[in-house]
Amino acid sequence: MHKIEELIIWKKSIELSKAAYLITTELPSDEKFGLNSQIKRSSISIPSNIAEGAGRNSNKEFKHFLSIANGSAYELQTQLILLIELHLIAKEKVKPVIDLCIEIQKMNYSFQKKL
Image 1 (tube, one colour):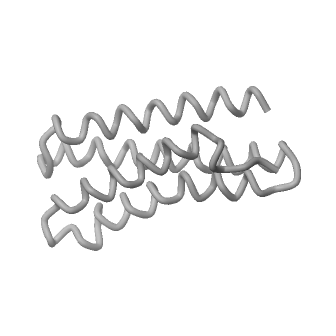
Image 2 (cartoon, rainbow, N blue to C red):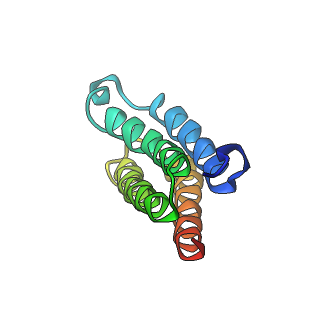
Image 3 (cartoon, rainbow, N blue to C red):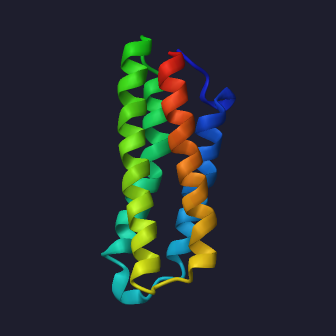
């Protein structure tokens, strides 16, 4: 078992979730059940799966949940790119969140290899 409070990837994924949630406040109200909901779900899935994996009994199980978290990170990245492509939010506001998402993807890959 790992202590999530000591995992940098978990801390950064919490930052990512907060940033993603803040981005959704700028979406039009007609996106409430569209991208807004999807962004919130995928962003919260990342630290949640890292935490669930950390609480498992083996590194094999942990890697499985890291893999799920990584899938959610790619899902979130796609949704954030769509915000830009659909001209819903300015690229300058979304780009730092995308960059953090990519950083977490790289950390996740490295962490899985380490386990």
